[in-house]
Length: 278
Image (cartoon, rainbow, N blue to C red; front, side, top):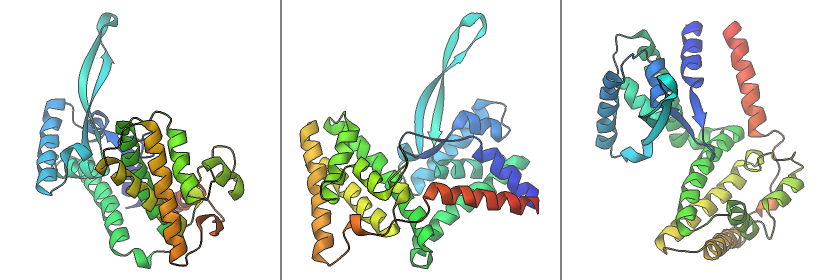
């Protein structure tokens, strides 16, 4: 059983990608090979069925199946463009559910993506039962998704300097502190992620800042980099004032976790390796 789990993990973890916003995804062409499909035409049938299932579940297809073009090399130094998809974990889950069940690796894929999806559902339904570190992982995942959506909204508003835009939000929430100021106060190394070094309460405050700024940019149809930056600052300030009004702890005064999420993730993987060896 341990061998099957390791094969499943290696097969699908090794082709997982992470974009510039920290969002994980899989390429359909790579998933095709992992699932032992030799023809794209046949694999695309599974993708189309998965899209239909996604639609029937009241989920937006474009949120989970993002069409992209790839350039591949051909004989005599020629090139050719082919279609591909950037897939979310949920999209992969739907695809393997609609793939050829006779393939052993498909069965492994069904187990892998079902377990991962189930873990997310459990986290959402039983949040109050999670440990502090588990809550941190959960909130961090939400901030990654939130920042991804916020960046898209900011780009549509005309933002080009994203460091300045995000610092505007931090300044509002942290009483004038920039991301670098927060990192220095926390004693972090150069380019170490400040969000990976926050407790669950601090992450939740930042998540509220992120989601409300995104909605404000969209709802008010804000255009212009300066206006977007000012909006982010104002939302951060509003969240700070709300914390103050309810008698909460200011984000800069919250305790700093002893270990970053990156460190905890590394320890978790080491433990998994030892368990597999046993």
